[in-house]
Image: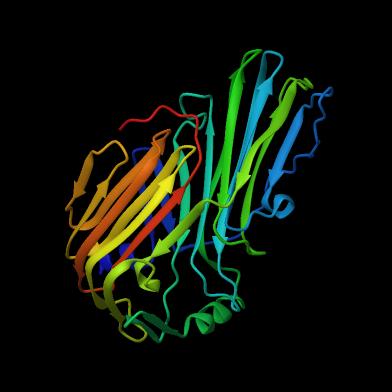
Length: 323
Protein backbone atom coordinates (compact mmCIF):
# COMPACT_ATOMS: atom_id res chain seq x y z
CA UNK A 1 0.00 0.00 0.00
CA UNK A 2 2.89 2.35 0.73
CA UNK A 3 4.23 1.92 -2.81
CA UNK A 4 0.78 2.30 -4.36
CA UNK A 5 0.19 5.57 -2.50
CA UNK A 6 3.58 6.85 -3.54
CA UNK A 7 3.13 6.04 -7.24
CA UNK A 8 -0.48 7.03 -7.71
CA UNK A 9 -0.87 9.92 -5.28
CA UNK A 10 2.52 11.58 -4.69
CA UNK A 11 5.65 11.70 -6.79
CA UNK A 12 8.72 13.62 -5.67
CA UNK A 13 11.93 13.20 -7.63
CA UNK A 14 15.09 15.12 -6.91
CA UNK A 15 17.76 13.57 -9.14
CA UNK A 16 20.46 15.42 -10.99
CA UNK A 17 18.99 18.67 -9.78
CA UNK A 18 15.47 18.12 -11.17
CA UNK A 19 12.25 18.25 -9.16
CA UNK A 20 9.16 16.21 -10.09
CA UNK A 21 6.01 16.33 -8.00
CA UNK A 22 2.61 14.86 -8.82
CA UNK A 23 -0.75 14.65 -7.10
CA UNK A 24 -0.09 16.30 -3.73
CA UNK A 25 -2.91 17.52 -1.50
CA UNK A 26 -2.30 21.04 -0.26
CA UNK A 27 -4.00 24.19 0.92
CA UNK A 28 -3.63 27.41 -1.01
CA UNK A 29 -1.40 30.13 0.44
CA UNK A 30 -0.61 33.78 -0.40
CA UNK A 31 2.32 34.74 -2.60
CA UNK A 32 4.65 37.48 -1.47
CA UNK A 33 3.27 40.78 -2.74
CA UNK A 34 5.98 42.30 -4.90
CA UNK A 35 5.39 45.38 -7.03
CA UNK A 36 6.03 44.92 -10.76
CA UNK A 37 8.04 47.51 -12.63
CA UNK A 38 8.79 47.37 -16.36
CA UNK A 39 12.35 48.47 -17.07
CA UNK A 40 13.25 50.65 -20.04
CA UNK A 41 16.53 50.92 -21.90
CA UNK A 42 17.71 53.81 -19.66
CA UNK A 43 15.92 53.15 -16.37
CA UNK A 44 16.85 50.33 -14.02
CA UNK A 45 14.55 48.98 -11.33
CA UNK A 46 14.63 47.59 -7.81
CA UNK A 47 11.64 45.26 -8.28
CA UNK A 48 10.88 42.76 -11.05
CA UNK A 49 8.00 40.29 -11.18
CA UNK A 50 7.23 37.96 -14.08
CA UNK A 51 3.82 36.31 -13.87
CA UNK A 52 2.20 33.70 -16.11
CA UNK A 53 -1.10 35.58 -15.76
CA UNK A 54 0.54 38.51 -17.56
CA UNK A 55 2.75 36.80 -20.15
CA UNK A 56 0.22 33.98 -20.82
CA UNK A 57 2.55 31.23 -21.98
CA UNK A 58 0.58 28.54 -23.83
CA UNK A 59 2.72 25.68 -25.14
CA UNK A 60 5.61 28.17 -25.04
CA UNK A 61 8.98 28.86 -23.48
CA UNK A 62 10.29 32.33 -22.66
CA UNK A 63 13.76 33.40 -21.57
CA UNK A 64 15.09 36.59 -19.99
CA UNK A 65 18.42 37.85 -18.75
CA UNK A 66 18.73 40.04 -15.68
CA UNK A 67 21.74 42.35 -15.57
CA UNK A 68 22.92 43.78 -12.24
CA UNK A 69 24.52 47.23 -12.33
CA UNK A 70 25.43 47.49 -8.63
CA UNK A 71 26.54 45.22 -5.82
CA UNK A 72 23.33 44.14 -4.13
CA UNK A 73 21.41 41.48 -2.19
CA UNK A 74 18.41 40.13 -4.06
CA UNK A 75 15.38 38.46 -2.53
CA UNK A 76 14.00 35.80 -4.89
CA UNK A 77 10.38 34.66 -4.48
CA UNK A 78 8.99 31.98 -6.79
CA UNK A 79 5.73 30.07 -6.84
CA UNK A 80 4.59 27.24 -9.12
CA UNK A 81 1.20 25.51 -8.82
CA UNK A 82 -0.46 22.97 -11.08
CA UNK A 83 -4.02 22.03 -10.16
CA UNK A 84 -7.07 20.71 -11.97
CA UNK A 85 -10.48 22.31 -12.30
CA UNK A 86 -13.65 20.23 -12.43
CA UNK A 87 -14.20 21.20 -16.08
CA UNK A 88 -10.66 20.27 -17.16
CA UNK A 89 -8.89 16.95 -17.29
CA UNK A 90 -5.69 17.66 -19.18
CA UNK A 91 -2.09 16.76 -18.45
CA UNK A 92 -0.02 19.72 -17.28
CA UNK A 93 3.65 20.65 -17.02
CA UNK A 94 5.63 23.72 -15.95
CA UNK A 95 9.34 24.53 -15.94
CA UNK A 96 11.47 27.12 -14.13
CA UNK A 97 15.25 27.58 -14.44
CA UNK A 98 17.39 30.38 -13.00
CA UNK A 99 21.16 30.33 -13.60
CA UNK A 100 24.16 32.65 -13.41
CA UNK A 101 25.48 31.42 -16.76
CA UNK A 102 27.18 28.26 -15.47
CA UNK A 103 25.19 26.98 -12.46
CA UNK A 104 21.80 27.31 -10.83
CA UNK A 105 21.05 30.33 -8.65
CA UNK A 106 18.60 28.20 -6.65
CA UNK A 107 20.34 26.40 -3.80
CA UNK A 108 18.37 23.14 -4.02
CA UNK A 109 17.52 22.76 -7.72
CA UNK A 110 19.09 23.00 -11.15
CA UNK A 111 15.70 22.72 -12.80
CA UNK A 112 12.23 22.85 -11.27
CA UNK A 113 9.88 20.69 -13.32
CA UNK A 114 6.31 20.00 -12.23
CA UNK A 115 3.93 17.66 -14.02
CA UNK A 116 0.51 16.14 -13.54
CA UNK A 117 -1.19 13.39 -15.56
CA UNK A 118 -4.68 12.95 -14.03
CA UNK A 119 -6.36 9.54 -13.83
CA UNK A 120 -10.04 8.71 -14.14
CA UNK A 121 -11.76 7.69 -10.91
CA UNK A 122 -14.16 5.13 -12.38
CA UNK A 123 -12.41 3.96 -15.55
CA UNK A 124 -9.06 4.83 -17.04
CA UNK A 125 -8.15 2.66 -20.03
CA UNK A 126 -5.66 3.22 -22.84
CA UNK A 127 -6.03 0.90 -25.83
CA UNK A 128 -6.05 0.83 -29.65
CA UNK A 129 -4.74 4.36 -29.97
CA UNK A 130 -7.33 5.91 -27.64
CA UNK A 131 -7.78 6.72 -23.97
CA UNK A 132 -11.10 6.35 -22.18
CA UNK A 133 -11.24 8.16 -18.85
CA UNK A 134 -14.41 8.43 -16.78
CA UNK A 135 -14.90 9.95 -13.35
CA UNK A 136 -12.01 12.39 -13.24
CA UNK A 137 -14.14 15.51 -13.50
CA UNK A 138 -16.52 14.13 -10.86
CA UNK A 139 -13.61 13.63 -8.47
CA UNK A 140 -12.32 17.18 -8.93
CA UNK A 141 -15.86 18.54 -8.67
CA UNK A 142 -16.26 16.90 -5.27
CA UNK A 143 -12.91 18.32 -4.15
CA UNK A 144 -13.98 21.81 -5.23
CA UNK A 145 -16.46 21.90 -2.32
CA UNK A 146 -13.57 21.59 0.16
CA UNK A 147 -10.51 23.70 0.96
CA UNK A 148 -8.26 21.16 -0.70
CA UNK A 149 -7.06 20.97 -4.29
CA UNK A 150 -5.28 18.14 -6.00
CA UNK A 151 -2.14 18.89 -7.93
CA UNK A 152 1.42 19.89 -7.24
CA UNK A 153 3.35 22.98 -6.15
CA UNK A 154 6.81 24.38 -5.48
CA UNK A 155 7.71 27.56 -3.58
CA UNK A 156 11.09 29.19 -3.00
CA UNK A 157 12.23 32.18 -0.91
CA UNK A 158 15.93 32.93 -1.09
CA UNK A 159 18.35 35.83 -0.62
CA UNK A 160 21.40 35.95 -2.93
CA UNK A 161 24.31 38.39 -3.16
CA UNK A 162 25.24 39.78 -6.57
CA UNK A 163 28.06 41.93 -7.90
CA UNK A 164 28.04 44.68 -10.45
CA UNK A 165 28.15 43.11 -13.92
CA UNK A 166 26.59 39.77 -12.89
CA UNK A 167 24.02 38.30 -15.27
CA UNK A 168 21.24 35.82 -14.48
CA UNK A 169 19.28 33.82 -17.05
CA UNK A 170 15.63 33.00 -16.36
CA UNK A 171 13.79 30.32 -18.36
CA UNK A 172 10.06 29.62 -17.95
CA UNK A 173 7.90 27.13 -19.86
CA UNK A 174 4.22 26.24 -19.69
CA UNK A 175 2.68 23.33 -21.57
CA UNK A 176 -0.97 24.30 -21.16
CA UNK A 177 -2.30 27.70 -20.10
CA UNK A 178 -4.98 27.30 -17.40
CA UNK A 179 -6.55 29.91 -15.09
CA UNK A 180 -5.82 27.93 -11.91
CA UNK A 181 -2.11 27.48 -12.65
CA UNK A 182 0.52 29.68 -11.04
CA UNK A 183 3.96 30.35 -12.48
CA UNK A 184 5.66 33.47 -11.24
CA UNK A 185 8.94 34.74 -9.89
CA UNK A 186 9.91 38.05 -8.29
CA UNK A 187 13.23 39.77 -7.63
CA UNK A 188 13.57 42.51 -5.01
CA UNK A 189 16.61 44.56 -4.04
CA UNK A 190 16.99 44.39 -0.26
CA UNK A 191 19.22 47.47 -0.44
CA UNK A 192 16.49 49.31 -2.39
CA UNK A 193 18.85 49.92 -5.29
CA UNK A 194 17.35 50.55 -8.74
CA UNK A 195 20.08 48.58 -10.47
CA UNK A 196 18.38 45.64 -12.22
CA UNK A 197 17.87 45.50 -15.97
CA UNK A 198 15.47 42.97 -17.54
CA UNK A 199 15.96 41.90 -21.17
CA UNK A 200 13.78 39.36 -23.00
CA UNK A 201 15.94 36.99 -25.06
CA UNK A 202 13.53 34.54 -26.65
CA UNK A 203 9.96 33.23 -26.82
CA UNK A 204 8.86 30.30 -28.99
CA UNK A 205 6.77 27.10 -29.13
CA UNK A 206 9.40 24.39 -29.68
CA UNK A 207 8.62 22.43 -26.51
CA UNK A 208 6.29 19.53 -25.77
CA UNK A 209 5.04 17.05 -23.21
CA UNK A 210 4.14 13.51 -24.30
CA UNK A 211 2.37 10.80 -22.31
CA UNK A 212 2.02 7.11 -23.15
CA UNK A 213 -1.33 7.11 -21.34
CA UNK A 214 -2.59 9.43 -24.08
CA UNK A 215 -0.95 7.35 -26.85
CA UNK A 216 1.47 10.09 -27.84
CA UNK A 217 4.38 7.75 -28.63
CA UNK A 218 4.91 5.53 -31.64
CA UNK A 219 4.61 1.87 -30.62
CA UNK A 220 2.01 0.08 -28.51
CA UNK A 221 0.72 0.90 -25.06
CA UNK A 222 -2.18 -0.74 -23.24
CA UNK A 223 -3.22 0.15 -19.71
CA UNK A 224 -6.19 -0.26 -17.38
CA UNK A 225 -6.93 1.09 -13.90
CA UNK A 226 -9.57 -0.61 -11.77
CA UNK A 227 -12.67 1.46 -10.86
CA UNK A 228 -12.34 3.49 -7.61
CA UNK A 229 -8.95 1.88 -6.90
CA UNK A 230 -5.36 2.91 -7.63
CA UNK A 231 -4.50 -0.56 -8.92
CA UNK A 232 -4.25 -1.68 -12.55
CA UNK A 233 -1.85 -3.03 -15.14
CA UNK A 234 -0.19 -1.93 -18.37
CA UNK A 235 2.10 -3.02 -21.19
CA UNK A 236 4.41 -0.74 -23.19
CA UNK A 237 6.08 -2.19 -26.29
CA UNK A 238 8.66 -0.37 -28.39
CA UNK A 239 7.52 3.14 -27.53
CA UNK A 240 9.47 5.66 -29.60
CA UNK A 241 9.75 9.42 -30.01
CA UNK A 242 12.26 11.57 -31.87
CA UNK A 243 12.79 15.29 -31.33
CA UNK A 244 15.18 17.93 -32.64
CA UNK A 245 16.62 20.90 -30.78
CA UNK A 246 18.68 23.78 -32.18
CA UNK A 247 19.25 26.26 -29.30
CA UNK A 248 19.97 23.94 -26.35
CA UNK A 249 18.13 21.11 -24.62
CA UNK A 250 16.17 20.54 -21.43
CA UNK A 251 14.92 16.95 -21.39
CA UNK A 252 12.99 14.83 -18.89
CA UNK A 253 12.18 11.22 -19.93
CA UNK A 254 10.75 8.81 -17.38
CA UNK A 255 8.93 5.51 -16.93
CA UNK A 256 7.17 5.32 -13.55
CA UNK A 257 5.34 2.46 -11.85
CA UNK A 258 6.57 -0.44 -13.97
CA UNK A 259 7.34 -3.83 -12.46
CA UNK A 260 9.85 -4.42 -15.24
CA UNK A 261 10.95 -1.92 -17.84
CA UNK A 262 13.65 -0.09 -19.73
CA UNK A 263 14.25 3.32 -21.22
CA UNK A 264 16.93 4.12 -23.80
CA UNK A 265 18.07 7.51 -25.10
CA UNK A 266 20.23 8.20 -28.15
CA UNK A 267 21.86 11.60 -27.68
CA UNK A 268 22.93 13.99 -30.47
CA UNK A 269 26.60 13.30 -29.58
CA UNK A 270 26.04 9.61 -30.51
CA UNK A 271 26.16 8.44 -26.90
CA UNK A 272 23.48 6.06 -25.61
CA UNK A 273 21.91 6.03 -22.17
CA UNK A 274 20.05 2.96 -20.81
CA UNK A 275 18.14 2.67 -17.52
CA UNK A 276 16.47 -0.57 -16.36
CA UNK A 277 15.65 0.36 -12.76
CA UNK A 278 12.47 -1.08 -11.32
CA UNK A 279 9.51 1.22 -10.54
CA UNK A 280 11.24 4.29 -11.98
CA UNK A 281 13.66 4.64 -14.89
CA UNK A 282 14.73 8.23 -15.46
CA UNK A 283 16.81 10.30 -17.88
CA UNK A 284 17.42 14.04 -17.41
CA UNK A 285 19.50 16.52 -19.35
CA UNK A 286 19.98 20.28 -19.09
CA UNK A 287 22.62 21.90 -21.27
CA UNK A 288 23.60 23.28 -24.67
CA UNK A 289 23.74 19.99 -26.58
CA UNK A 290 21.56 20.15 -29.73
CA UNK A 291 20.50 17.93 -32.60
CA UNK A 292 18.39 14.79 -32.94
CA UNK A 293 17.29 12.96 -29.81
CA UNK A 294 15.72 9.49 -29.92
CA UNK A 295 13.77 7.96 -27.01
CA UNK A 296 12.69 4.35 -26.50
CA UNK A 297 10.74 2.62 -23.73
CA UNK A 298 9.27 -0.79 -22.95
CA UNK A 299 7.83 -2.26 -19.79
CA UNK A 300 5.07 -3.98 -17.85
CA UNK A 301 3.11 -2.26 -15.12
CA UNK A 302 1.59 -4.24 -12.23
CA UNK A 303 -0.14 -3.82 -9.79
CA UNK A 304 -0.87 -0.40 -11.30
CA UNK A 305 -1.08 1.30 -14.65
CA UNK A 306 2.41 2.69 -15.18
CA UNK A 307 3.12 5.67 -17.37
CA UNK A 308 5.88 6.91 -19.65
CA UNK A 309 6.36 10.65 -20.17
CA UNK A 310 8.70 12.87 -22.19
CA UNK A 311 9.09 16.61 -21.64
CA UNK A 312 11.51 18.71 -23.64
CA UNK A 313 12.28 22.38 -24.29
CA UNK A 314 14.45 23.69 -27.12
CA UNK A 315 16.37 26.37 -25.20
CA UNK A 316 19.89 27.12 -24.00
CA UNK A 317 19.52 27.06 -20.18
CA UNK A 318 22.95 28.70 -19.72
CA UNK A 319 24.12 26.01 -17.34
CA UNK A 320 27.11 23.69 -17.45
CA UNK A 321 25.97 20.23 -18.52
CA UNK A 322 27.02 17.12 -16.57
CA UNK A 323 26.73 14.75 -19.58
